[in-house]
Image 1 (cartoon, rainbow, N blue to C red):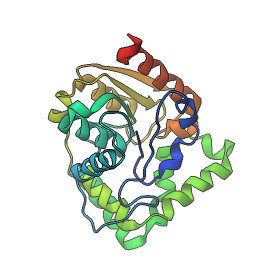
Image 2 (cartoon, one colour; image 1 turned 90 degrees about the horizontal axis):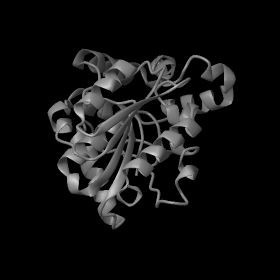
Image 3 (cartoon, one colour; image 1 turned 90 degrees about the vertical axis):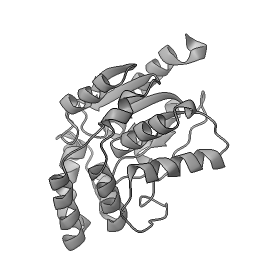
Image 4 (cartoon, rainbow, N blue to C red; image 1 turned 120 degrees about the vertical axis):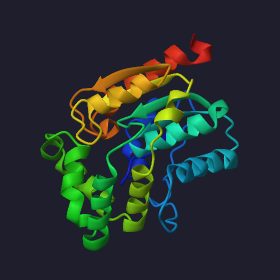
Length: 242
């Protein structure tokens, strides 16, 4: 189960998913307020997103899953694993933390977006999403991801900003017993490697790895390396592989 970051949709996993389709049933979805999903009135909570995920798993008759979440998707995965531990086989938490940013930072972003629109912060946000060379090396892809961000509903984006602002999953995350892989792009400017290593330290059964030449979305910039890390982790920690 792949869970997206703030301001993106399920296409960020396009080049990662083929590495898993032969061995696993793969599910991607757009969280509330993103992509093609409904955009209910804000504010949202991380638990709202986790309950959405639980409902989706129920509808799909999936009892247990490997959760792979990036950024706020990683927060959703943490909250889900703490609330429904029996439903989580393994966790892959990419470029995320138990608490991200400060209330002041999120309130400033929310105010700017509500008064000036998504375009006003697009370049600043993308500078944290990607390593500096990505825009020069892949200009068409860079513009596509910029469009993905700026064309999403302000309500969906800011509602999820409020969910991140109000979430501190530190104590809940300490209780998660599932095997966990914590990944981070080495050039992540949103959740830095130092912050993400702190998440790995909270988890009782976690290992940490960095993806070189990647920012906040290594699944986009370095999909092959990301898939290799995840595959190796699943092989090490799956019951039928031990």
